[in-house]
Length: 525
Image (cartoon, rainbow, N blue to C red; front, side, top):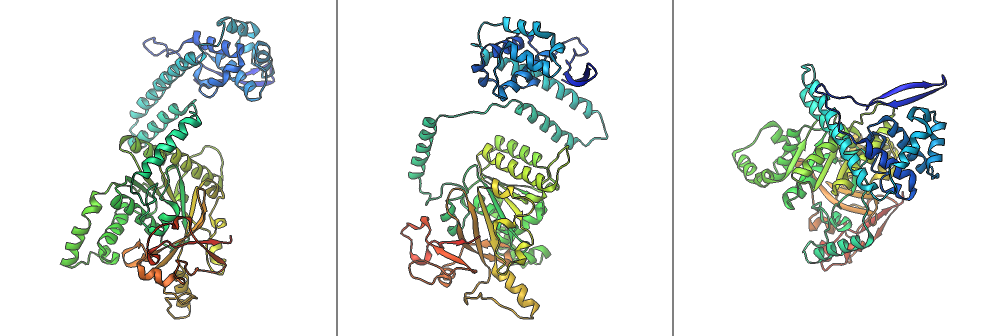
């Protein structure tokens, strides 16, 4: 339905919805004017019933232009918490210079005479929704058919556009579903019992494969948006690849990664290097011995069988990412989505927006997608250069680039911090080498995962080790934990200044102290 502009009395411009006419064969688009009038009449008769349809119907659901105008006026009065009846609707239309366009007060009176009550309002509204969907499908299919004859258009872009248009139809007037607390408590109790009877070692979500981290987070939780942020050189992509590999190979999860920065084959080469523990440089140069070839084939069998999907589409839009995830989730299911990285996603917008607004939209869209699909989404993010200006180089929430909304939308924000990296940079400037920190602890490859925000629990730190030769992260060995330990009860030396060691609430287990959980380190941000 297109809009036509009319000037009323030479003063005010009014947009009038236009009816889509019959097709060449004379068939009229699906519509039911009688039910449109019945719905509008019922809404003016019983205001208390409007709430049941106000989030289902829009002006577009009404085929007749005058009915669309009347609905818009009723909706405005409802939104403004005003009284809704024949007189108030007429006054609203008079103020907007649209009363004469619909046929005056007489037409409104006819609408109220169509029904005696709002008893069937929900049922009638559902029929209007069905007719609207039919009309939109006819319109979209006509546009697609016309464009398909144009040889200058890219067919794959047309497929994406088709999917986008169909999704827009689906979401017009999408009704919010509500569930009572009784049903939710019943489901929560069933989930709790299922976890109680399953040997999950306290992991209620998708496991990361890193024991310290999993004891704090209990795994990546459904519907959560997790931001993994760091400066270049910390190993964001390598860590995300390790998370993806662990979830898919060790725990049998279905994982999808959107690699906007690295080509799919490059990413797979990293996974192969980590799985076979053959140096990534050797794989890159194809400089392998016979024994290494044999090990490569042997070790990559499990990796080949893993449920991992990789999409390396450059300049991917957030809408296309959402559409792909929805399609794959509906077809085969997804347990985890990884985005590398958030700031490389595009937001297609018609108006003028700055980059901060675009990033805000993207982060909200990712959070919305996580809730819709009820799966965790891990999005990598770049930190600003403010980190480098700080004495200890430790990241904090204010370092997230381009938008504070990333912090607001995220359920969890993780920072990667490798003191070794900054020490090497400093020592190289002086022509020296160092593998120890200020407390004389061996920190070669040691990486601190700083949990700067945790909506469901406590903040803190976990520790892993970066195996640079294989571009992967691994769990700490017992001897690594002993190096960090300064007390027999399981407390560990803090890394960096102004940090406090706090016992984790997840530490109530019977594991040996030396193999136990690294307690939380709360940063004073």
